[in-house]
Length: 570
Image (cartoon, rainbow, N blue to C red; front, side):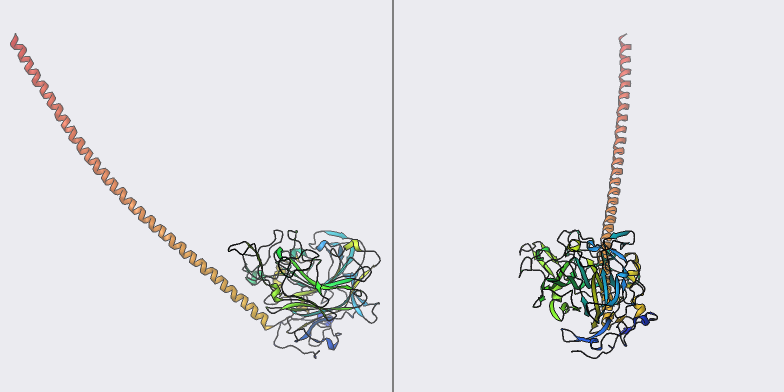
């Protein structure tokens, strides 16, 4: 069921100058980001939840004069950089992205991303050196231009013919930037906002750069306090077409950190088990032809992951013969929140989905005994970061890469007829109040490569619903509570320490006083003893003197008597 286009109400809009970009954008009445060539019957869609969604962005790629080099298009930036991610073999150049008529599909004007086998040199993402790659292609990003949070996104595209090519239509969190790995390390693809000491990461997995354990000042850091952040990734399409064209496949995926314990991961090329080891994630639902992508569940435990070691949750359809010969629609529904989830539809056929419950806690213990060691991944969340759009073709690693190229399908062309985004409640902009990015990006500009021009806020005013502002207020309020709790704990500790110090000082004073009394008494006793000793000594001296005097007196008497006797004998 399709409804007439209508303007959503109750939104806050920033006041910005729109000239001259608004003129080049050719905005549709009432929708700044919408292409005026979008058919009227595409101005609203009905989601799988039965609710109506209104068009908030579209690009029909009907103007062949467009250039996507930085600063020349209000919606897209075509990169000029050597792709060093995923063992890349491609230099991305703006001239590899053009708007043209598709000769294989009469009447269709589309974006063409051309991949050619031509040795090319370009700057690495850090901008510090030049790298030569064997192939050249294009990557278009709406990074820091158009971002949205939740909704329905749809691409109509025709994939390149031939093994080894890696066409991708995807969403990437605006806090990071695709290809620029320095901006993504510790952010990609984290969707986690808990401060949990039980979180254990593989030893080679970089920790979350911006975690819920960190206090931040919005004015100084550009971040809200105690909020975990990430550069989330949702892939609407990753495709692999064979050289014959038959037996091809396409997958949609969620890249997610932190990953679950290795116990839950199925073996490579094996499918998830019903329960026990290898059971993978809960609440994954697959359509009639949909199946899990058993070729990749994420880097094996212990892999060297310079940017991150996520889980790769993906599902798709296989054994398709016409991905390259006709246009398919690739649609993804993205619902944020505790009752949200992600679902994929190819040509309106349900492929697979995962619910909010899929992002919950996963725990395995060595035994049921109390105190037994456990491995645990705390609750994650459905991605809620503002996401930008990305379109590119790389030379794959997982689908054979250069060794799979047969040299018969040059140039390889990814054709995109249109990109459209609908939302139940408009939520567009790259710097929402509850997930800010602008100040952080500006503060760390050296991580993100050449700044995108023009900024999205210079083209269209952002639209953030009241719920985003309320969420930001709730985060700040919770932070005040956390700080108060910390300060209360600190004050309690300080009071305890002060009391202990006072008690110690009192005890020491009492000890010193007692010691002084003891010393005083000891000194008095010593003085008394000394006085007594002196008295005794004086008495002894007197007695000794008296004794000597007595002896001397006796000698005198004895001498006198002896003299008288001598005189009497004569």
